[in-house]
Length: 123
Length: 107
Image (tube, rainbow over all chains, first blue to last red; front, top):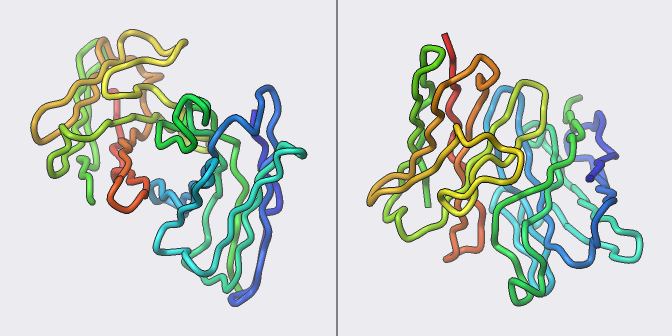
């Protein structure tokens, strides 16, 4: 199970930190991702953190930072310089297959999703 | 890399719906499919082009051709109404690409 938290209302130019808590599996064994969905729009992948690699979508690169704490079984997304275009529901997801199975990074399907946390960037 | 889905597909109850995901040389990529109902998180329904996770009815199937991957929903039910998204990895950039989504209506 994955549970996101930290969403809310933030002013343009502001910052927010999202968290994703895991349970029911060995968190350190898996790559994780953040996916967002703007109101009425489709899914947009924004960040991946694996065993060796971190990747970002161009739309957030340089503004967002993903990190993980395996001891706490959690992942975070630090979001800076937010604008209205970042308004969305943010989901954390698990990449299927263990990092060991994939050889260090897993570029696979997303088999577990959190319920999402809404972020509203508005003045 | 871009993948394209039709915005909407309609199907009568009991009939078969097909949703396509088109992209350049998509046959060279591995396609995954998600179902999302309103207000809910997406659920994986097909992975690795044609495999079904446990708990997904066998009415859901996946296939691929040269120019498009296809999600097929057989014997469609009212409960299958949802948005469906295809997903691939763009390994040139190590980015995930989602299709724009297809709204399936069962009427």
